[in-house]
Length: 90
Image (cartoon, rainbow, N blue to C red; front, side, top):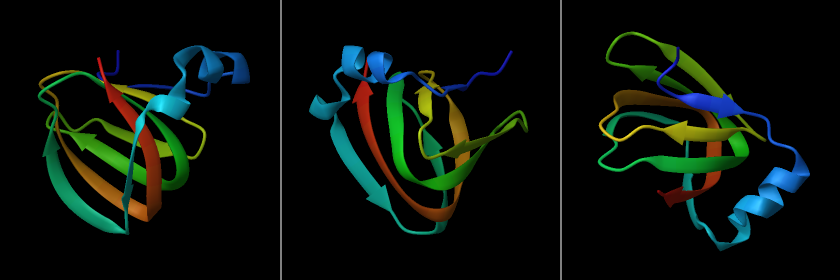
């Protein structure tokens, strides 16, 4: 089972999560290492990224994806198309 959970949510789920109240983040094409010190949920508004975990699992994330990153995850982000997301820590 993947450590990173990715789904394509229905509009009703997006409303239920109230993503309009989440913080926003944008980043141009780039590569960087990241570690999650809290569980993070995010919804991708634009762009495309490949996230590779320490164990070598590679997850492709794109516009329309709802993603859950677990607390403690160490990974590398490789942004291939400028990304725009909204996020919340749970």
